[in-house]
Length: 299
Ligand code: NAD
Image 1 (tube, rainbow, N blue to C red):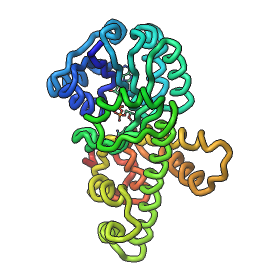
Image 2: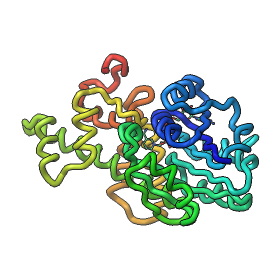
Image 3: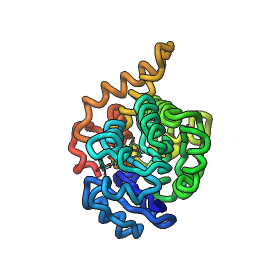
Image 4: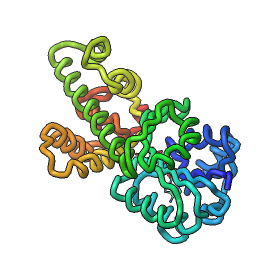
């Protein structure tokens, strides 16, 4: 019961599981054997062949999966972990999931005496590596306190937002603002260039002035203007988050973000396979003149 089972070792899960395994006894699982081998080699974690078999020994389960449908499959699908974990176990879903799905899973967990916390993160791969993620937690206060030692090795800021699903709601809204910042700054840089101000110069102006954001400070200089577009956060995952944010708007009048989310959704069709979320800027000719060029020719 003292082992933590960490499932989902992708762009974010791998560095997080490596940090976790250095602090706590950790078993790991992913559909990708390569991802598992990497975390075992770098973090000293123990691979498990089947999470259902490993569940009985796990006091805590941490999930870092793409979306709610993956979380539901792992927890309540065939051989789902909520039917395998012992009462008293703790589940921490750190992916960006849907609040309504999280609430339903937390109820099933509660019926079985299992604590459930949604604890999605912000900060990207860079902050996952350094353990400086911003974590927004939803769930009962006692459950969030149980989760805190695990979250402490992964994040610099841990904020209990409210009951189950609140962390997910806050995360989706953060990404709505974050993606809007990229879109708005892209348009401002395109206008600047038309006026005769280089995008790099305009980015420096924003960063010294009140128009700055994490997009202008990190994404434009690091991923967009050099044309690498390799932030490690997929465009499609960002669209998922925008969809979650808009789904909880619940009829509120939100004309600005309605328009931004429409633009982000329409822009996807103009980009190639599996674009990075920063590639919205390519639609304005930033970092790369041809948004349809294959990615391997750009990096
Ligand atoms: P990813 O696609 O890189 O990784 C997901 C991993 O889950 C993959 O390794 C995949 O094999 C694994 N997986 C899928 N289904 C599985 C299953 N049934 N059992 C075991 N493993 C399974 O995604 P990511 O970028 O690491 O993002 C994970 C979550 O974190 C998403 O919800 C995303 O929105 C969120 N997030 C991502 C970032 C980022 O910068 N990449 C930042 C903050 C939050």
